Length: 109
Figure 1 (spheres, rainbow, N blue to C red):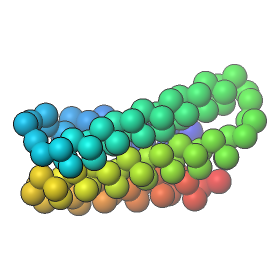
Figure 2 (tube, rainbow, N blue to C red):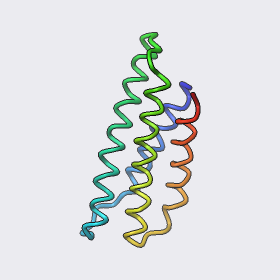
Figure 3 (cartoon, rainbow, N blue to C red):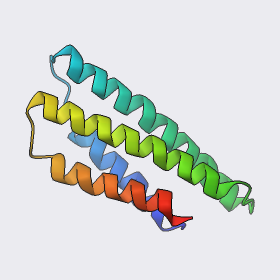
Figure 4 (cartoon, rainbow, N blue to C red):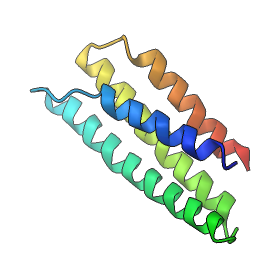
């Protein structure tokens, strides 16, 4: 489980680096804002879990991991919608792979 956290964080950084700010339609901006909000929630939960595990506490780890993964799935789905709205199809495969990682994290416990 500890190996998944660094991999997940790396994939999130890669997702962020692929998002380019531009003058866009309001629907695109809505999906992008939703992505950032939910991704932030997922990241915060995962950071809390990581700190708890380092401190030796396993309280509600699986429940919180599933919660983080749910936010991550919703965030990634919003990002996919944003790219589709914007007409970009090149990043969709990478985003699908990220979505699969979130689902794996959710189902891991």
